[in-house]
Length: 342
Image (tube, rainbow, N blue to C red):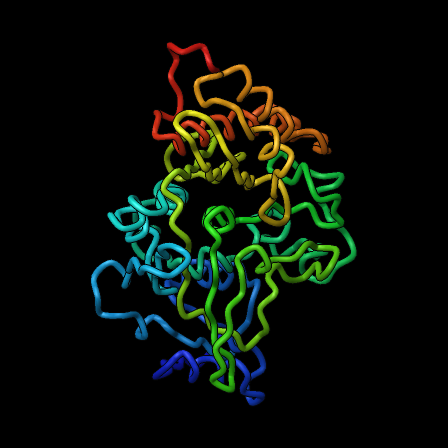
């Protein structure tokens, strides 16, 4: 395997390189964590790596800013902002804590110090059939989703296939509860903005890709709205390097301890970030302190779940993750063994 490395002078230059027809398979990299994994497993054979890491701003913290707008504040951060920078940012903690919480314990400290926000959003699935070259699965253009009859402990309980991956990004659902917008440029230097809720599509629309951006798109920055009453909670098998079994992102509009409205999304349960409008509607008017009513509302999360042979446990875990995300969004500890909630 051999390839050239290009270091563009701008995001627009990077987009032009991706669209350059003289290269068979140009691949974009920033932190490069997922790209390296694909190279090691011989899943890709690029002839050009377009390295956008040198375009990273010199400002500390990946250039995370809070701006005031006519419709309320927005937090804006560069696409190359690392997960560590998001997790440790005082701006993010104050204005949109769900974003920082979503990446605070992802992967390992070493990965978080390098992996970028845009890379987290656009990483490829972690399904072991996709990640092994010997399986010619649907995701790679084959005719079979091996998870249907194979080992499907970590696969989807929503979405109805035909590919049963779970979306790999912790950050994506956090952006969705935060009115997230992804800014990008194309080969012609044109600037575009895509709401995070429109960034991904189901396998039924295109089984070989996950996002809706064109091939020449280069993400430049990401912005989210002020969501101070927001929270994230993941259930894992172990607290060190591990992928979530399920997780939840929640945003609340509170009047005292009463929930005026809510937005609830789940992760690690479907091929795309999964909205839970029935839970959000059931939470309307509920008091945070009414553990029974919160529990009843969260039970709506699994109404349409269709677990596979080995992943029925996710049906039990998802309402728990949502309840604990609600507690974090309301400023309380994620769980309290003495209040009888769990």
